[in-house]
Image (cartoon, rainbow, N blue to C red; front, side):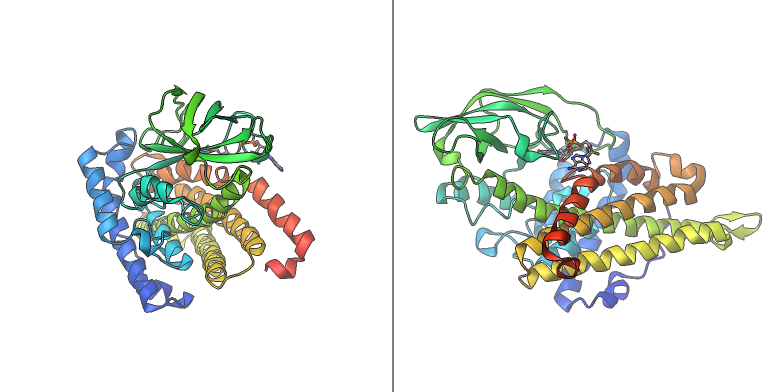
Length: 402
Ligand SMILES: Cc1cc2nc3c(=O)[nH]c(=O)nc-3n(C[C@H](O)[C@H](O)[C@H](O)COP(=O)(O)OP(=O)(O)OC[C@H]3O[C@@H](n4cnc5c(N)ncnc54)[C@H](O)[C@@H]3O)c2cc1C
C-alpha cells in the first residue's frame, strides 16, 4: 500500500480551529497509529493476534505517549484531556484496523466520581495504569437494545450479593480481569431496580458458555458468559442500589462519541488510501480518478467525512463547554448515528474503488468493510439512536438540539 496523499495532520485540520495543544496530541496519536498500521495484515492472518510481547510494547508506548486513559482525571494518573482531545486521539486510533488501536484504552470515566476509596485503589487506579482491564457484562440474549429488560439478578445475602444470569457479547472477557455486571435486584426494598457490580475475574461461578466467531478479526473475544451464584462482597456494589441504569447511560454517552471518533479515523484512512490508488491505477491509459463515476465516490466520501467530523468535534466542544446533559445525550446519538453510517458508506465505496484488490483481506478497504459494520450495532443500534434523537426533538424542540 502506498503512503496516503493526505496532508500532514496540522495542514489537514486547521479548518477545525484546533488549539496548538489539540494539534500536538493529535500529531502524537497520528504518529502512533502509523506505527501500528504495519502490524495489521499479520494480525488479520493470525486470527487477530500479534505476539504478546508486541502487544505489551504497543500498550507501553501508548502510555508513554500519553494516549492511554486520556479520559481519566490526572490525580488518578490519567491524561485529564478535554473531550475534544479524547476525540482527536480516538479518531487516530480508528485509522487502524484489527482493533490494534485499542491499546489507547479508555477506562470507565464515569466510575471515579461514584467509586469508594476501596474501588478507586482496587479497580480504577490499576485500570488507569494499564495493570488491570475491564469488560462489560450487560447485554443478554433477550435484552440488548432494551437494557431495561435485563433478567440477570443480584440478591443481597448478608455482607455480599449473589449474581446470576447469562451475558452475551462480553467484549474483551478473554483479556479482562474484572467485569461490570448489571442486574435486577431480587428482594429487598429496591427489588426490581438495577444495580451495577464489579466482579473480579476469574471468580467462582463465572464461566464461558461458548465463544462465537464474529465478522471482524480481532484478538478481543465476545463470549457468552454465565454467572451462577457468583458471590461478590457488598463493597463491590457501585454507587447505591438502583443506580445501575444511570451508569449505563453515562457510559453510552461517552462511548457513542468515541465510536463516532473512531469512525472518522477509519473513513479518513479509507479516503486517503482510495485517493492514492485512484490517482495511480491506470485503466485504458488514464488514472481511474478521471472517470466520473470513480471521482464521485471520492468526492462523496470526503464531503461526508467533513460533515461528520464537523458534527463530532462540535459535539465534543459542547460537552467541554458544559452543555445540558440531555442535549449532549441526543447529540452523541446524532454523532454516532451519522459517523457510523458515513463510515460504512465510505468503506463500501473504497472496496469498489480498489476493485478486485478491495476484496482481498490484505487490503485495508476489505478489513474496514467488515469491521465497521458493528459500529451501527453496538453501543445502541442506528435505530435506537434515531429513537433517542426523535424523542428529544419532540420533548425539547429540534432547535434545542441542533
Ligand atoms: C461485536 C459485539 C460486541 C459487543 N460487546 C458488548 C459488550 O462488551 N457488553 C455488552 O453488554 N454488550 C455488548 N454488545 C451488545 C450490543 O450492545 C447489542 O448487540 C446492541 O445493543 C443491540 O442489541 P441486540 O443485539 O439485542 O439487538 P436487538 O435489541 O435484538 O435488536 C434487533 C433489531 O431490532 C431493532 N430494534 C430494537 N429496538 C428498537 C427500537 N426501539 N426501535 C427500532 N428498532 C429497534 C434493532 O435496531 C435491530 O435492528 C456487543 C455486540 C456486538 C455485536
